[in-house]
Length: 224
Ligand code: TYD
Image 1: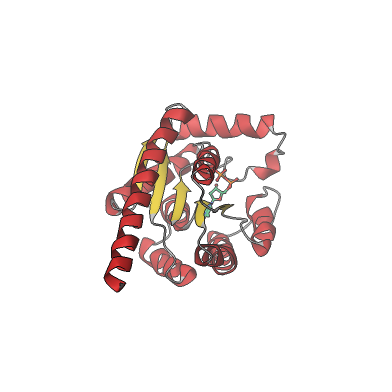
Image 2: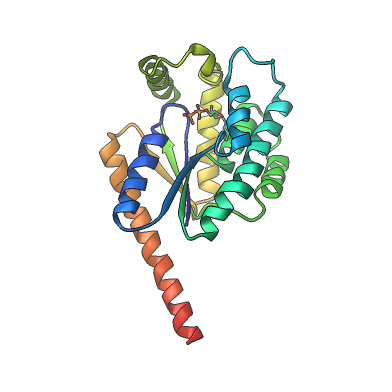
C-alpha cells in the first residue's frame, strides 16, 4: 500500500506521517516513511537547491524539472523497491504537490503537468492521499514558528516567503484536485488537534487495509 500526505506549509503532514508509521508498525507491518523533495540520495542534493533562498534565481520551469527529477529518482530507487519488498510506503508529498504548487501556485498548465507526472512515476500511484487542509494564514504562522524553534535559517524558507495569494491558490488547487479524485483523496481539517486528525486517518487506513486483505484472500481462494 502506498499512502501520501499533502497540504500547504505548516499543515502537520510530517507529524501525521510519523503517527501513522507508529500505528502500522504496532500492527506488525514493515513501513517506510519518505518525503519529497529529498527522499533519495540525488533528492537530498536537489532539496538543498530547491528550498534555499539564496540559491540561483530559479525559473518556474527549472524548478519544475528539479521536482520531477527528484520524483523520478525517488520512485525508481526508493518507493518501487520498498513496495515490491512488501513494505507500506508513506510519502510526505508526491505528485499532487506538483499540481498544486506548480499548476495552481505558479500557474503552469495542468494538462502538461499531469502528463509529466505520469511519465515520472511510471505507474506508481498512491492508493490513498490525505489532504490536510488549512488556511494559509494559520499554516504560514505554524511553519514560521516551527522554523524558529528548530533554528532553521530563514534561507530554508523559500516557499514560506511567497506571498499569501500564492499559498491561497495552492490551497484552492488542492481542494479542486480533491473533488476530481474523490476515490483517492481524503480531505481533513488540519486546524483540529493532531490526535483528532490522526483518528480520522487511522480509521481510513485500517478500513483500506481490510478491503485490501479481503481482495487478496478472495484472489488466493480463487487460485486454489
Ligand atoms: P518542505 O520544507 O518539505 O515543506 P513542507 O514541510 O511544507 O512539506 O518543502 C517542500 C516545498 O516544496 C513545499 O513548499 C512544496 C514544494 N514542492 C513543490 O513546489 N512541488 C513539488 O512537486 C513538491 C514535491 C514540493
